Picture 1 (cartoon, rainbow, N blue to C red):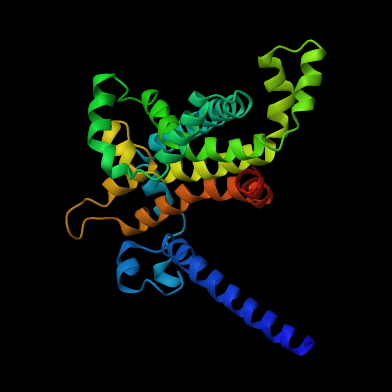
Picture 2: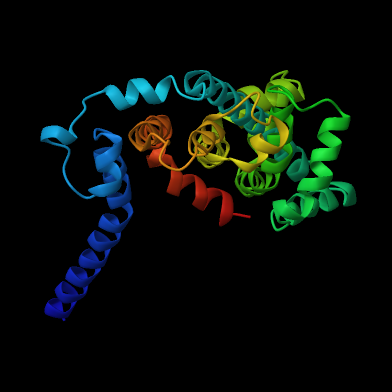
Length: 279
């Protein structure tokens, strides 16, 4: 039996190592090619950047100054941070209200949020674009509210599952001590939501940071985010695209989200289990 378990473990580790290599290889390929001249990126994409291929940091300097990438990077940082903050704040309060105020209205509201998770974006994007323009939300402030709307479904679902596991007696004790509902939420409930809040932050940060279609529809090319700036950099005529700079832009664009994920990854499983299994 022990030998069989060792065999199964060895097979499992082999599969996991293989899957890890499959996922990491494209990232390593982009990283290698970010140090090559544009000619060798096309002719020798799998070769190591050495000799005449190696151009140092030239691609990064060119990429950061191409298509307004630096401004797009700052804009993406602002939109991502503001959107994630607003999503966590609003959806956690909504989930708390839905769980604690048990009426037909809150029950219907909960199912509306759940239903919104299965509606494809392509189904509503034309109507959304019209309404965003009509309400003058087609700017870097308005898109934050749009992200709140699209990110509310999953976030409310996860927060609701966790709030159900929070003992009501703790909130009652806070009320007896003189806390009003806002103080109870901010001082008692929200600190207990930390694992789920970090999980929601990670999921939404990766989505907002990597999103291309929504910023392109709302902001267009006048206020580019990172994915839009990278896409526009690839729209040159044949032979004119600086693939080395393009690869450098890709590397720079994935660094923030990787750092954020590494710093917060220990909360992911804990938060997902708490939000999806309980309640």
